[in-house]
Image (tube, rainbow, N blue to C red; front, side):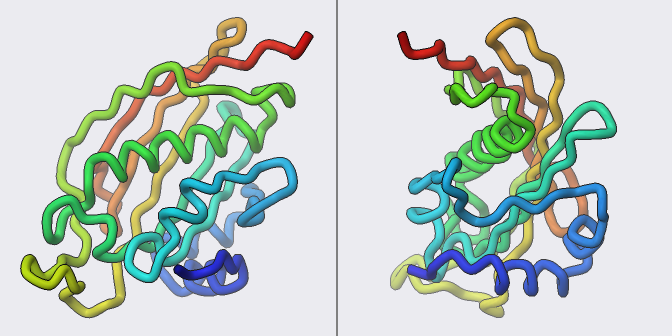
Length: 190
């Protein structure tokens, strides 16, 4: 397993054309890999291996309205469901992650935390990634991996409910996956 290293992640994404423009936009704020307020062991540790999530970064901006965030991911063959195609469950997890990071970053939870109430994911086209050998499970291809970008935008807030729209784009900018998410703010402890 690789360890989170925001400097190497930032360096990698600055060299990739599709992500460099987002990173160089001064209207975005980059969230550190792990903060004392936000720690997500599933995504940041379980997915961060030598073959799955190789690099990642999250950036957001609260204005212009509506707030939006981008989860930049460099992935390898470890995210495959079938050889050469990212697993649908992984993509759903990415959608939940980008939405949750946006909520946390712009403080929509008012410090109480939120839980996912609904996540409706639509698969428009396959997210192509490096494949693996069906007999050995070893990765095949150049070994460079692929970049995907998940973007979440606030749709609206109704009481304790937060509605978010999200998309995943491939390296070519093609929309591959869409999602509509509803999060519910936790009630204050009594």
